[in-house]
Length: 344
Image 1 (cartoon, rainbow, N blue to C red):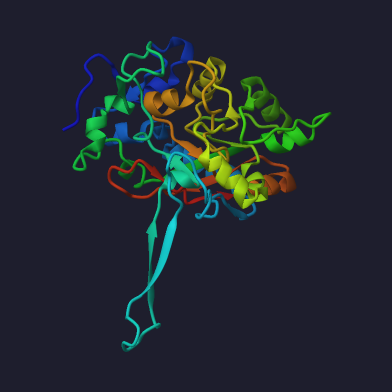
Image 2 (cartoon, rainbow, N blue to C red):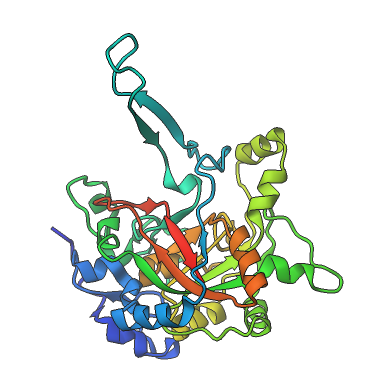
């Protein structure tokens, strides 16, 4: 049974028409009744059939397709005790038996957070009292879901099974920050393993340079160039990163201006190639994860492989595309490989 938070109003998707500045509690906008499918999809409810159909019509012109998932064995040295993906091939008939080697299965042992993944709503919480600092130990997940509900294996509230029936599909837009930096004079240099952050105003500047105007339901991607940088590391450099007690991840700078823009633009989900999407550790009291996952029910995608997407966007001189993503149909799932593709 879903626990109800009696102090927080429940909304329907019409709340998304309310400007950020008019929201009663901008950090907490929960839609749907506790335990409902509407609660389970959160801001993905912006992806109506009309929005998706319009995006497919306007974006699919050439039929070119680009996968957005990184090699599942990477990050082969990860942080926070996350194990790398294990893959075992198993013959259906043992050695010496009739038909040995004629047929195989395989077994995966994985933590989706280690490579390309969507953060689901069970991944990150916010303080029970939204005015409390992020260090508060009294916390709730989207919809008021509690840690006890998440740890209860019979309770699947706000799990990935709510995303799976329709998946994530709509217009994707790319902010190619990594490429933009190379075009500046002098070029902006940074490492993805630092506190380098992207201010809101820079994101808006790049959108204008790329001639992109956000539309309701858009899925926003930001490329920082993580993939080639990681692949350039030696094995010892990768191990050094994984052994750090507090790693540093470059990403978006959290700000109220950014959050207001995401809300008022009608963005349904955000993603990128950065490890934490936003800069980590957070350099202030504001956390995008607390707002987007815990407060709005907005998926956050991390460690996507955006290299081929970047090349295709530059070749075609267009930074919008049709995005399809089918998360795992796992009852109570916390996160999922994206199984994502951009179609031009």
